[in-house]
Image 1: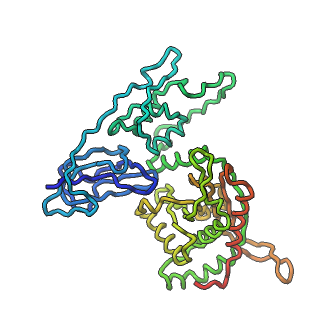
Image 2: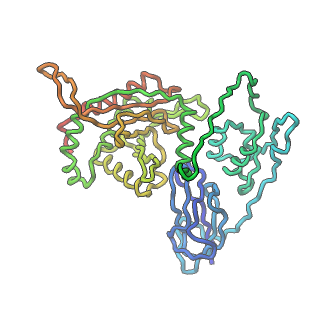
Image 3: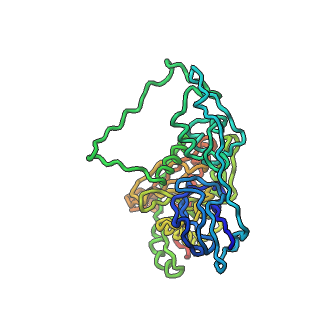
Amino acid sequence: MPIVPLKMPKMGESISEATIISWMKNVGDTIEIEETILEVATDKVDSEVPSPCTGTITEIHFQPNDVVPVGEIIALIDASENGEIAAETSKEKIKAETPKIASQPTSNNTTSNSQQTTYVRNPDAFLSPLIVSIAKKENMTIEEVQSIPGTGADGRIRKSDVFNYLKNRQYPLASRPQAQPKATKSSYNPPPIKYVEGHDTVVEMDRMRKMIADHMVYSKHTSPHVTAYIEIDVTNMVNWRNANKIPFQEKYNQRLTFTPLFVEAVAKAVIDFPGINASVSEDGKKIIERKDINIGMATALPNGNLIVPVVKNADEKNLKGLAAEVNHLANASRENKLKPEEIQGSTFTISNVGTFGSLMGTPIINQPEVAILALGIIKKRPEVITTQKGDEIAIRSMMYLSLSFDHRVVDGYLGGSFLRKVGDYLEEFDPNRKI
């Protein structure tokens, strides 16, 4: 009988590893082809991994909470003679290799009387994007990270290795700037948080909330945020949408919300100001202008967490296509059915804070992008407008737009001009537009 390897699947072009959440099956269990065998998670989305064949699970190489690189063999399945095997799976027998634990001296064993740490560095240690991200947040040098003993396969440094190291990290650290004299250091200590057992409620952050928190803190540390605001009159757009939402659904079988109209206006403005559709290189010295216009739309999940599905090539879609894509992504988000590729590759993000009744917002940039647009609630109120008869007071539908941008590469002119252009496209909406 063939032994079929189950490998950690690739779940997006920028994803190099994933965390095992739970196994649906155990060693010795039988499984059908395409039946879910385990759940995994990246920093973007949770996914179910199907079995590549029908057979019996003979080995499981990793446990829940293990971080596993893409392509690594995570289990072996003994396929039955009559069982089906997925086309992309090799039918050759795979010899399971026992993970090797690298034997590296720890920095804690080489401490001098002054408690200065020296590193025994392993320059061949593989550092995943997740490990590099953690290192940046903790202000660790490459030498320090590569000195951490890895407990993964072939001595691979895992997230748990870094966190365990940080618990016992010693100061001052070699190869790092020395601490300033005490006289110039801040004496501020955060006040302890006091709560009453049995009276206050303490809720453990779930995994996604922790990742969101890390992403937001990382963004604020990385990009100097500046936020600009404008107020716009969207009466024509609101009236057109209200008049056409039922005919639109009857014609195309798609709900017509405001979101595809917002995405359409943003995509047009990006074409006018391509500098807003960019990222900053990792060394912080180059600006990468994106050719594709992929609009992320921040979406609230039923549990209160946030995810950003992406409308790919938004500038190439008509309103029917945008509506269909937006509806699909919104529904998939609520049902936790988003595919990994549907939350990858955004180049600019919008956040409709008006959905929650907010007048305006100061959104945090979705790294590695350089700007994010928040759309406030649409409210009717009396406004002074200019007509052929002169100035008059009329009831208009008004809303605020706010753009947070990375001031390293987006200056006030570019940020303000782009924001104004989005506003112009929404204000100048054709009330006679055909669906």
